[in-house]
Amino acid sequence: MTLSLRDAIPNTDDAPLRLLVFGADAAEAAQIRRMRSYLDCGFDVTGFMMRRANMNRDFVPFWDNVHLFETANESPLRRIAAVGRSIRKLGRYRDRMQGADVIVARNLDMLAIAASARARLRPRPALIYECLDIHGLMTDPGPKGQLMRAAERRLLAQCSGLILSSPGFLREYFEPVQGWTGPTALVENKIWIGPDGPARPRPGTRPRPPTYWTPDRPLVLGWVGTLRCARSLSLLAAVANHFGPRLQLQFHGAVHHHAVPDFEVTLARHPNMTWSGPYDYPDGLDRIYGACDLVWSQDLWQWGTNSTWLLPNRIYEASYFGCPSLAVDGTETGRRVADGLGWTIPRPDPDALIARLETLSPTQIADQRDALLRRPDTDFRQSSDDIAAAIRMPFTARP
View (tube, rainbow, N blue to C red):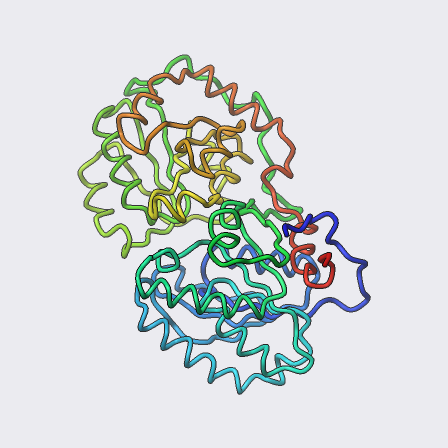
Protein backbone atom coordinates (compact mmCIF):
# COMPACT_ATOMS: atom_id res chain seq x y z
CA MET A 1 0.00 0.00 0.00
CA THR A 2 1.07 3.62 -0.47
CA LEU A 3 1.37 5.43 2.83
CA SER A 4 -0.14 8.87 3.24
CA LEU A 5 2.65 11.01 4.64
CA ARG A 6 0.23 13.16 6.59
CA ASP A 7 -1.33 10.15 8.30
CA ALA A 8 2.07 8.61 8.98
CA ILE A 9 3.44 11.20 11.40
CA PRO A 10 3.39 9.65 14.88
CA ASN A 11 3.53 11.31 18.25
CA THR A 12 7.01 12.69 18.84
CA ASP A 13 9.03 10.86 21.47
CA ASP A 14 11.36 12.68 23.88
CA ALA A 15 14.43 10.95 22.46
CA PRO A 16 15.23 11.45 18.76
CA LEU A 17 15.13 8.46 16.48
CA ARG A 18 18.56 6.93 15.92
CA LEU A 19 19.12 6.58 12.22
CA LEU A 20 21.79 4.66 10.31
CA VAL A 21 22.05 5.73 6.66
CA PHE A 22 23.85 3.57 4.11
CA GLY A 23 24.71 5.57 0.99
CA ALA A 24 26.54 4.89 -2.26
CA ASP A 25 28.43 8.19 -2.34
CA ALA A 26 28.82 10.56 0.59
CA ALA A 27 29.71 13.39 -1.80
CA GLU A 28 26.74 12.98 -4.15
CA ALA A 29 24.48 16.04 -4.17
CA ALA A 30 21.20 14.19 -3.49
CA GLN A 31 22.81 12.26 -0.63
CA ILE A 32 24.07 15.50 0.92
CA ARG A 33 20.61 17.06 0.65
CA ARG A 34 18.99 14.08 2.30
CA MET A 35 21.50 13.98 5.17
CA ARG A 36 20.91 17.67 5.80
CA SER A 37 17.17 17.03 5.89
CA TYR A 38 17.56 14.19 8.41
CA LEU A 39 19.58 16.43 10.71
CA ASP A 40 17.07 19.25 10.32
CA CYS A 41 14.35 16.78 11.35
CA GLY A 42 16.18 16.25 14.63
CA PHE A 43 17.24 12.63 14.02
CA ASP A 44 20.41 11.23 15.56
CA VAL A 45 22.19 10.26 12.33
CA THR A 46 25.22 8.14 11.52
CA GLY A 47 26.21 7.55 7.93
CA PHE A 48 27.95 4.49 6.50
CA MET A 49 29.03 5.68 3.09
CA MET A 50 30.94 4.72 -0.02
CA ARG A 51 32.77 7.34 -2.10
CA ARG A 52 33.09 7.62 -5.87
CA ALA A 53 35.90 9.34 -7.69
CA ASN A 54 33.95 11.16 -10.38
CA MET A 55 32.91 14.32 -8.51
CA ASN A 56 33.12 16.53 -5.42
CA ARG A 57 36.42 15.05 -4.26
CA ASP A 58 37.07 17.68 -1.60
CA PHE A 59 33.75 17.24 0.19
CA VAL A 60 33.93 16.41 3.90
CA PRO A 61 30.72 14.99 5.48
CA PHE A 62 29.12 17.29 8.05
CA TRP A 63 27.45 14.32 9.76
CA ASP A 64 28.88 11.51 11.87
CA ASN A 65 30.22 9.31 9.10
CA VAL A 66 31.96 5.96 8.65
CA HIS A 67 33.80 5.70 5.34
CA LEU A 68 33.37 2.25 3.85
CA PHE A 69 35.27 2.00 0.56
CA GLU A 70 35.74 3.84 -2.69
CA THR A 71 33.77 2.36 -5.56
CA ALA A 72 33.16 3.27 -9.19
CA ASN A 73 30.38 3.92 -11.69
CA GLU A 74 29.72 1.22 -14.28
CA SER A 75 32.12 -1.24 -12.64
CA PRO A 76 30.01 -4.17 -11.36
CA LEU A 77 32.93 -6.32 -10.21
CA ARG A 78 34.45 -3.47 -8.24
CA ARG A 79 31.09 -2.65 -6.70
CA ILE A 80 30.50 -6.28 -5.69
CA ALA A 81 33.95 -6.38 -4.11
CA ALA A 82 33.23 -3.16 -2.21
CA VAL A 83 29.97 -4.63 -0.89
CA GLY A 84 31.75 -7.74 0.40
CA ARG A 85 34.53 -5.74 2.01
CA SER A 86 32.03 -3.36 3.59
CA ILE A 87 30.07 -6.22 5.14
CA ARG A 88 33.27 -7.49 6.72
CA LYS A 89 34.21 -4.00 7.88
CA LEU A 90 30.91 -3.58 9.73
CA GLY A 91 32.18 -5.95 12.42
CA ARG A 92 34.32 -3.12 13.79
CA TYR A 93 31.31 -0.88 14.28
CA ARG A 94 28.76 -3.06 16.02
CA ASP A 95 28.83 -0.98 19.21
CA ARG A 96 28.42 2.19 17.16
CA MET A 97 25.36 0.75 15.39
CA GLN A 98 23.74 -0.77 18.48
CA GLY A 99 20.55 0.99 19.59
CA ALA A 100 19.57 2.21 16.13
CA ASP A 101 15.82 2.55 15.53
CA VAL A 102 15.86 2.72 11.73
CA ILE A 103 18.29 1.80 8.97
CA VAL A 104 17.89 3.49 5.57
CA ALA A 105 19.66 2.06 2.54
CA ARG A 106 19.89 4.09 -0.67
CA ASN A 107 20.24 1.70 -3.66
CA LEU A 108 20.57 -2.08 -3.87
CA ASP A 109 24.30 -2.31 -3.11
CA MET A 110 23.78 -0.46 0.14
CA LEU A 111 20.67 -2.50 0.98
CA ALA A 112 22.79 -5.66 0.98
CA ILE A 113 25.25 -4.04 3.38
CA ALA A 114 22.47 -2.58 5.53
CA ALA A 115 20.71 -5.96 5.82
CA SER A 116 23.96 -7.44 7.09
CA ALA A 117 24.24 -4.63 9.64
CA ARG A 118 20.68 -5.20 10.82
CA ALA A 119 21.31 -8.93 11.29
CA ARG A 120 24.10 -8.11 13.78
CA LEU A 121 21.92 -5.98 16.04
CA ARG A 122 19.55 -6.87 18.87
CA PRO A 123 16.87 -5.70 18.90
CA ARG A 124 16.79 -5.49 15.14
CA PRO A 125 16.00 -2.01 13.81
CA ALA A 126 13.49 -1.34 11.06
CA LEU A 127 14.99 -1.47 7.57
CA ILE A 128 13.86 0.97 4.84
CA TYR A 129 14.91 0.66 1.21
CA GLU A 130 15.10 3.99 -0.59
CA CYS A 131 15.10 3.55 -4.36
CA LEU A 132 15.95 6.61 -6.44
CA ASP A 133 16.43 4.84 -9.78
CA ILE A 134 15.71 1.44 -11.31
CA HIS A 135 19.12 0.34 -12.57
CA GLY A 136 19.25 -1.12 -16.08
CA LEU A 137 20.30 -4.50 -14.72
CA MET A 138 17.03 -4.77 -12.80
CA THR A 139 14.99 -4.71 -16.02
CA ASP A 140 17.37 -6.86 -18.07
CA PRO A 141 15.39 -9.92 -19.27
CA GLY A 142 18.50 -12.12 -19.33
CA PRO A 143 20.13 -14.25 -16.62
CA LYS A 144 21.94 -11.30 -15.00
CA GLY A 145 18.68 -9.41 -14.62
CA GLN A 146 16.90 -12.46 -13.23
CA LEU A 147 19.66 -12.94 -10.67
CA MET A 148 19.58 -9.29 -9.60
CA ARG A 149 15.79 -9.25 -9.26
CA ALA A 150 15.89 -12.43 -7.17
CA ALA A 151 18.53 -10.86 -4.89
CA GLU A 152 16.44 -7.71 -4.54
CA ARG A 153 13.28 -9.70 -3.71
CA ARG A 154 15.15 -11.56 -0.99
CA LEU A 155 16.35 -8.30 0.53
CA LEU A 156 12.92 -6.67 0.17
CA ALA A 157 11.50 -9.46 2.31
CA GLN A 158 13.55 -8.05 5.20
CA CYS A 159 12.34 -4.46 4.69
CA SER A 160 9.75 -2.66 6.77
CA GLY A 161 9.10 0.00 4.16
CA LEU A 162 9.99 1.39 0.76
CA ILE A 163 10.73 5.04 -0.07
CA LEU A 164 10.33 5.99 -3.72
CA SER A 165 10.86 9.28 -5.55
CA SER A 166 8.28 8.56 -8.27
CA PRO A 167 4.93 6.73 -8.33
CA GLY A 168 6.06 5.23 -11.64
CA PHE A 169 8.58 3.04 -9.84
CA LEU A 170 5.85 1.44 -7.76
CA ARG A 171 3.32 1.13 -10.59
CA GLU A 172 5.72 -0.17 -13.25
CA TYR A 173 8.27 -2.16 -11.28
CA PHE A 174 7.92 -2.85 -7.57
CA GLU A 175 4.29 -3.98 -7.61
CA PRO A 176 4.09 -5.93 -10.90
CA VAL A 177 7.68 -7.21 -11.10
CA GLN A 178 8.80 -7.59 -7.48
CA GLY A 179 5.40 -8.19 -5.91
CA TRP A 180 5.88 -5.56 -3.22
CA THR A 181 2.79 -5.09 -1.03
CA GLY A 182 4.38 -3.44 2.01
CA PRO A 183 4.21 0.18 3.16
CA THR A 184 5.46 2.71 0.63
CA ALA A 185 6.16 6.41 1.06
CA LEU A 186 6.49 8.76 -1.89
CA VAL A 187 9.24 11.31 -1.21
CA GLU A 188 9.72 13.19 -4.44
CA ASN A 189 13.03 14.81 -5.38
CA LYS A 190 11.86 18.23 -4.29
CA ILE A 191 14.28 21.01 -3.49
CA TRP A 192 15.59 21.11 0.09
CA ILE A 193 15.98 24.69 1.34
CA GLY A 194 16.54 25.69 4.94
CA PRO A 195 14.80 28.58 6.72
CA ASP A 196 17.46 31.04 5.49
CA GLY A 197 16.61 30.55 1.83
CA PRO A 198 17.35 31.31 -0.89
CA ALA A 199 13.97 32.99 -1.32
CA ARG A 200 11.80 32.56 -4.39
CA PRO A 201 11.51 35.41 -6.89
CA ARG A 202 8.22 37.27 -6.91
CA PRO A 203 5.89 37.00 -9.92
CA GLY A 204 6.32 39.81 -12.43
CA THR A 205 9.78 40.89 -11.28
CA ARG A 206 11.70 39.63 -14.33
CA PRO A 207 11.58 41.88 -17.41
CA ARG A 208 9.63 40.46 -20.36
CA PRO A 209 11.73 40.51 -23.54
CA PRO A 210 9.89 41.85 -26.63
CA THR A 211 11.20 38.99 -28.75
CA TYR A 212 13.49 35.96 -28.90
CA TRP A 213 15.45 34.34 -31.69
CA THR A 214 17.91 37.17 -32.34
CA PRO A 215 21.66 37.15 -31.67
CA ASP A 216 21.07 40.07 -29.28
CA ARG A 217 18.33 38.20 -27.40
CA PRO A 218 18.61 34.46 -28.00
CA LEU A 219 16.28 32.04 -26.28
CA VAL A 220 18.20 30.50 -23.36
CA LEU A 221 17.63 26.78 -22.80
CA GLY A 222 19.24 25.19 -19.75
CA TRP A 223 20.25 21.65 -18.84
CA VAL A 224 20.90 21.53 -15.10
CA GLY A 225 21.84 18.87 -12.56
CA THR A 226 23.63 15.56 -13.02
CA LEU A 227 24.64 15.52 -16.69
CA ARG A 228 24.74 11.85 -17.63
CA CYS A 229 22.41 11.47 -20.62
CA ALA A 230 24.25 11.12 -23.94
CA ARG A 231 20.95 11.03 -25.84
CA SER A 232 19.89 14.38 -24.35
CA LEU A 233 23.26 15.88 -25.23
CA SER A 234 22.92 14.68 -28.82
CA LEU A 235 19.36 16.01 -29.09
CA LEU A 236 20.32 19.42 -27.68
CA ALA A 237 23.34 19.62 -29.96
CA ALA A 238 21.12 19.06 -33.00
CA VAL A 239 18.78 21.80 -31.79
CA ALA A 240 21.78 24.10 -31.25
CA ASN A 241 22.88 23.41 -34.83
CA HIS A 242 19.46 24.29 -36.19
CA PHE A 243 19.05 27.64 -34.42
CA GLY A 244 22.65 28.79 -34.30
CA PRO A 245 23.21 32.09 -32.44
CA ARG A 246 19.46 32.58 -32.00
CA LEU A 247 19.55 29.91 -29.27
CA GLN A 248 21.92 29.66 -26.32
CA LEU A 249 22.25 26.40 -24.39
CA GLN A 250 23.60 26.69 -20.84
CA PHE A 251 24.69 23.53 -19.01
CA HIS A 252 25.27 23.46 -15.25
CA GLY A 253 26.25 20.55 -13.02
CA ALA A 254 28.57 17.59 -12.62
CA VAL A 255 29.28 15.60 -15.78
CA HIS A 256 29.34 11.79 -15.61
CA HIS A 257 31.98 11.23 -18.26
CA HIS A 258 31.49 7.47 -18.26
CA ALA A 259 27.97 8.13 -19.58
CA VAL A 260 28.73 11.14 -21.82
CA PRO A 261 32.33 10.63 -22.98
CA ASP A 262 31.93 13.11 -25.87
CA PHE A 263 30.74 15.99 -23.68
CA GLU A 264 33.68 18.37 -24.16
CA VAL A 265 34.06 17.49 -27.85
CA THR A 266 30.38 18.25 -28.48
CA LEU A 267 30.57 21.61 -26.72
CA ALA A 268 33.69 22.56 -28.64
CA ARG A 269 31.78 22.10 -31.91
CA HIS A 270 28.91 24.36 -30.85
CA PRO A 271 29.74 27.95 -29.88
CA ASN A 272 26.20 28.46 -28.60
CA MET A 273 26.62 25.67 -25.98
CA THR A 274 28.38 26.50 -22.69
CA TRP A 275 29.07 24.56 -19.49
CA SER A 276 29.61 26.33 -16.17
CA GLY A 277 30.60 23.28 -14.12
CA PRO A 278 29.21 22.21 -10.73
CA TYR A 279 27.30 24.77 -8.69
CA ASP A 280 26.53 25.59 -5.07
CA TYR A 281 23.32 24.01 -3.80
CA PRO A 282 20.93 25.61 -3.11
CA ASP A 283 22.50 29.08 -3.24
CA GLY A 284 23.50 28.82 -6.90
CA LEU A 285 20.08 27.80 -8.18
CA ASP A 286 18.43 31.23 -8.28
CA ARG A 287 21.17 32.60 -10.54
CA ILE A 288 21.12 29.55 -12.83
CA TYR A 289 17.38 29.31 -13.35
CA GLY A 290 16.98 33.08 -13.44
CA ALA A 291 19.26 33.18 -16.48
CA CYS A 292 17.28 30.49 -18.35
CA ASP A 293 14.05 30.96 -20.26
CA LEU A 294 13.37 27.20 -20.27
CA VAL A 295 15.04 24.01 -19.08
CA TRP A 296 15.31 20.57 -20.64
CA SER A 297 14.02 18.28 -17.88
CA GLN A 298 13.62 14.90 -19.56
CA ASP A 299 16.06 12.08 -18.87
CA LEU A 300 16.52 9.81 -21.92
CA TRP A 301 19.37 7.67 -20.61
CA GLN A 302 17.37 4.48 -19.89
CA TRP A 303 14.46 5.04 -22.23
CA GLY A 304 11.45 2.79 -21.76
CA THR A 305 12.33 1.93 -18.17
CA ASN A 306 13.97 4.11 -15.52
CA SER A 307 14.05 7.34 -17.56
CA THR A 308 10.40 6.90 -18.51
CA TRP A 309 9.33 6.30 -14.89
CA LEU A 310 11.36 8.80 -12.86
CA LEU A 311 10.66 12.34 -11.63
CA PRO A 312 13.93 14.32 -11.70
CA ASN A 313 14.84 16.92 -9.11
CA ARG A 314 15.35 19.54 -11.86
CA ILE A 315 11.59 19.94 -12.40
CA TYR A 316 11.18 20.99 -8.76
CA GLU A 317 14.22 23.26 -8.73
CA ALA A 318 13.25 24.97 -11.97
CA SER A 319 9.62 25.40 -10.95
CA TYR A 320 10.53 26.77 -7.51
CA PHE A 321 12.53 29.53 -9.20
CA GLY A 322 9.96 30.12 -11.93
CA CYS A 323 11.63 28.47 -14.92
CA PRO A 324 9.34 26.39 -17.16
CA SER A 325 10.35 22.85 -18.12
CA LEU A 326 10.32 20.84 -21.34
CA ALA A 327 9.72 17.07 -21.30
CA VAL A 328 8.37 14.20 -23.42
CA ASP A 329 4.78 12.98 -23.58
CA GLY A 330 4.03 9.55 -22.14
CA THR A 331 6.67 9.69 -19.42
CA GLU A 332 6.22 10.31 -15.69
CA THR A 333 8.19 13.54 -16.11
CA GLY A 334 6.08 14.56 -19.10
CA ARG A 335 2.83 13.98 -17.22
CA ARG A 336 4.04 16.13 -14.32
CA VAL A 337 5.36 18.90 -16.60
CA ALA A 338 2.09 18.94 -18.57
CA ASP A 339 0.29 19.61 -15.28
CA GLY A 340 1.28 23.27 -15.24
CA LEU A 341 5.08 23.12 -15.12
CA GLY A 342 5.81 23.82 -18.78
CA TRP A 343 5.41 22.09 -22.14
CA THR A 344 5.90 18.65 -23.64
CA ILE A 345 6.92 17.28 -27.02
CA PRO A 346 5.47 14.13 -28.62
CA ARG A 347 8.80 12.40 -29.29
CA PRO A 348 12.36 12.67 -27.95
CA ASP A 349 13.87 13.90 -31.20
CA PRO A 350 15.30 17.23 -32.46
CA ASP A 351 12.47 17.96 -34.92
CA ALA A 352 9.86 17.72 -32.17
CA LEU A 353 11.81 19.98 -29.82
CA ILE A 354 12.55 22.50 -32.59
CA ALA A 355 8.86 22.63 -33.51
CA ARG A 356 7.85 23.20 -29.89
CA LEU A 357 10.42 25.94 -29.31
CA GLU A 358 9.30 27.80 -32.42
CA THR A 359 5.71 27.97 -31.11
CA LEU A 360 6.62 29.63 -27.80
CA SER A 361 6.40 33.41 -27.54
CA PRO A 362 7.98 35.65 -24.89
CA THR A 363 4.51 36.30 -23.49
CA GLN A 364 3.72 32.58 -23.13
CA ILE A 365 7.01 31.90 -21.37
CA ALA A 366 6.66 34.90 -19.05
CA ASP A 367 3.07 33.96 -18.17
CA GLN A 368 4.14 30.39 -17.41
CA ARG A 369 7.01 31.66 -15.25
CA ASP A 370 4.69 33.86 -13.20
CA ALA A 371 2.15 31.03 -12.86
CA LEU A 372 4.86 28.82 -11.37
CA LEU A 373 5.89 31.51 -8.91
CA ARG A 374 2.29 31.90 -7.73
CA ARG A 375 2.08 28.21 -6.79
CA PRO A 376 2.68 27.20 -3.16
CA ASP A 377 6.28 26.52 -2.09
CA THR A 378 5.25 23.06 -0.94
CA ASP A 379 4.58 22.00 -4.54
CA PHE A 380 8.33 22.08 -5.12
CA ARG A 381 10.02 22.32 -1.70
CA GLN A 382 10.56 19.38 0.59
CA SER A 383 9.27 19.71 4.14
CA SER A 384 10.58 18.20 7.34
CA ASP A 385 7.19 16.55 7.85
CA ASP A 386 7.55 14.65 4.56
CA ILE A 387 10.95 13.30 5.55
CA ALA A 388 10.02 12.54 9.16
CA ALA A 389 6.86 10.72 8.11
CA ALA A 390 8.74 8.49 5.69
CA ILE A 391 11.32 7.53 8.31
CA ARG A 392 8.61 6.79 10.91
CA MET A 393 6.70 4.70 8.36
CA PRO A 394 7.64 1.29 9.88
CA PHE A 395 6.08 2.31 13.20
CA THR A 396 2.94 3.92 11.83
CA ALA A 397 1.91 2.02 8.71
CA ARG A 398 -1.51 0.48 8.91
CA PRO A 399 -1.64 -3.33 8.57
